Image (cartoon, rainbow, N blue to C red):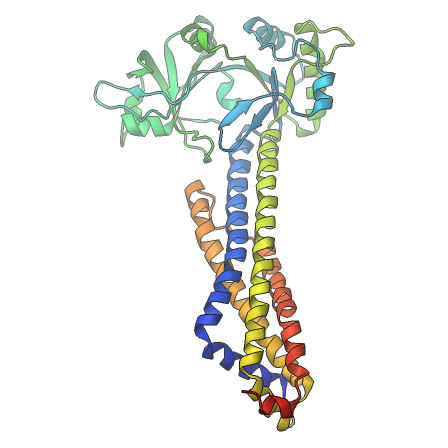
Length: 426
């Protein structure tokens, strides 16, 4: 009996036991489905995060009073590192927000060649913006900045103009709006927004310009924003108690380390730190935010691998039991094959092929379902089609091993049957 004959006979036996095969395939498919689904969704989220946070530019960094951390399920929070050693190194001043005086002092003292410095202050989120006739959903975020805010945060103006230094310093009631806000309030013609008076959280502002649309993510929609001067946010929302943020952009990526080092040396005296005291501020490079989030996604990925592994162990046990049942059901058939000249190797091959085929059917079903449903997340995040090829190949290899492992004992048991006893089996 050739391998081809064994393979054909195995396939006939699989088709002859459709219900039993289907149940086994579903069990295996569930484990692979969970793995591929989560990995695909994680890759889509990773692509979205990378795209979203790269808009600041690799040659930019910001200075905050403490590190930004993100937690899933509870939204964004700004907390210091949980690492105990880093906590011990920080002094008693940790957690003191950056004041306007400190921000302005840094901007005046920082003289790195070719660098631009911007001052920003975050306003409230989930606010409503309206005209006399139209209004947005309560999903708009308000930010305060200076005349450098747009360039340092990757925004470009589609219609209108940017703030002037005078408008920022005097705190005039002017603003820039994102394309999503403009489309909601002035559908079809964003130019109508220029010089129009809108109400941002019930406060009147005159619109200077509309921003071009740029990449967004599920974590932050860059088109649903209103940007005014940081003086306005300070004056109107003093009770929020937010800390000022300093953004710095250098004109050469190779100078980033020098620029961040000088920023630290300039800001320490501004914060009145002694030589022996640890920094009570955090320099946040543009890619570190995404790295922090991707680290959290990595924990989710590891958990998913564990769940898939446990599911596949259960599937392997189930497949082995089914193959043992098949050995008992086909005892006479095995005896007949041996009586006609079939060898132990032929019997083993037949049962191993059958076990591996069932396992691979589960793998294929799980992979296809996982990719299709996982890419729903990719569509929602606007990241394009995501196929985790590495995990697809790994899934096929793992299921092949599972099939071999589950079918090995039943195959050996079947090959050792005495043909005379097998033919007399009832």
